[in-house]
Image (cartoon, rainbow, N blue to C red; front, side, top):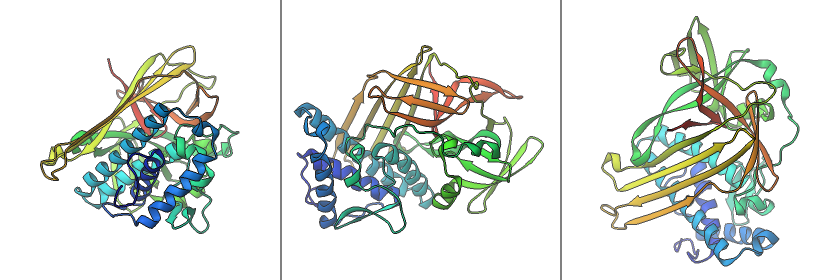
Length: 374
């Protein structure tokens, strides 16, 4: 931060640090020092946004400290995850960049791949419709999901052949190779789509295919064997319900209720490879059958300093607070926050056995899998 001309004791500078780290990561930049002139431009832009938001200007000193700590922690986690991925090659960098892209889009309300960081701050790329930092208050507070609106692409479901989820390998706590799952929608035209987060009826499929080609491919089926060929032309043949490819179940059309706590644990670092950095992140969603839900999270990073000479330990624990409301309708979950704002996300139940049977202890919210742990 000092090299960028930013102050570690200033909440605005902390927010700017997160934005810069996220912008670099989602655009695949690793370990590159940001020009101080660009950093100051980002800082000034965010300062103007925060100065014009009465909710932010009325924050208590403790609330401002909490926001600053959260932004710094998230920036550290981004840096650590990208550095760890860089040690595993370009494919892992792309995968980690895509994960951070989804997280940053939800956190900031801005498509950071559609903006450039310039001496005028964050500005949309030519032809892009993304909002800049100066036009979104939610970006500074990282707390308000988008307001729910009528589905713009309800006809998308008429094109669907089936909904499934598939195995992929990622990076876990300490840089360990882990197994994870992601939801996949197969269309009748022979294409498939790896869910990005929003409910399918809210996705402009043509725009998604152009902006995020990595999320698209083609599929064929022979009996219970599916061949998925990704955007680069690499194909895998997967047998249904045989460890790597599974049927996903929806909720009933009239709505559904859950009565369970689900968790997701992820992380990064390089201690598993002999390095010094360990990162862990845990998210919790607790649903009640009366339509209420709460969410909590924990994030932390530890660096021994054995190699860099600089040791650190940072953490943020956010217990489940604030009661929201939820409804599930087939493959869509609508989440209403305590402040009344709502968002629609893709939803699915997992499956087990062969033939496939509904497994309510595994769910997908957006593109992420959550598991019930006793």
